[in-house]
Length: 385
Image (cartoon, rainbow, N blue to C red; front, side, top):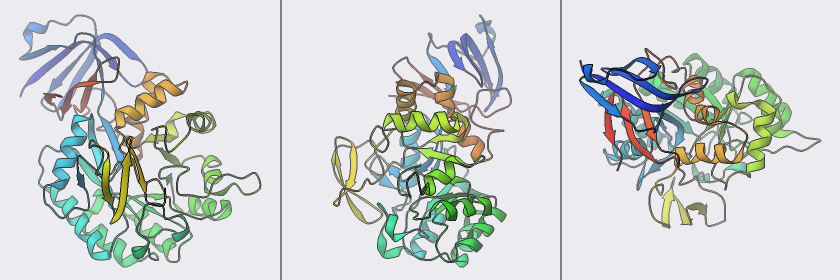
């Protein structure tokens, strides 16, 4: 078993940054974290990080694609190509996120996701986050209206039969007919029930939260906003205690003040940074597609013909940087929004999300300008070029 020593690093741990710290990897597990000057000669591999930061690998729980590929593509290698792209950006765990489509297309997408995970390759795909098709036409956003439908327990059972526990999240509109039974079934499978593309008012969403809805996907976008006489879906989440909210921190989807206000109201532990990235992420401006809809990318901004936002081209580490630069959060808390918080929401924080003895060695090294230089996936390190 290979033992690696990483030293002379600023290490982001659960509550602080260890200056001039060191970390030992044994196989694919973090063995120990400390500070000072270790005896590097006694280790099989010793790497001087020359003052770079070491942090837990990022986790993107809402991603449709990247590098020219989409999770709905029929090609067998699409998921692996997206995984490689995400890994280069410091994402050591991500959820493939199919959009509203026909029942057959969604079933096939679930099978492809399960096949990649079952192959047990050293890959960073953690499961599926199905966004739709049980959503509101009125708040459809960049979802194909042709395939939006009512909640169908048969479809949910099909996804569960294919993916099991790897069906990590399902985003739906709780006001749709048939969705109450869907929520109950998803809870039985320990799947996180999220909401977006919803026209629910405050009362309807508050009742849905009581029933089991526990997360807002791309918070503020694709849902009823806050009004002083009708707080809407946004108000229901701000008024709840145990829910979490996905945030797209790209300066496009939300004003920086909106992020600051939200953090002041609910605190950093309930916020999860996501990319909502589509196939154009990592690519040049131009014309692409998302869920069968035409998307135009200009200056990295993704929009439909009607002007609606259509996902993003965001890198998750850039979202962390945006929060760090535009809010009062320090680097530790800013990083947690894209590492520990998503790991905890998925129930995977015993393995991922922080640099601690006994956890999986999913690690990112980056510089002061947030440029990634190395990553370790399950202890396997590589230089990022």
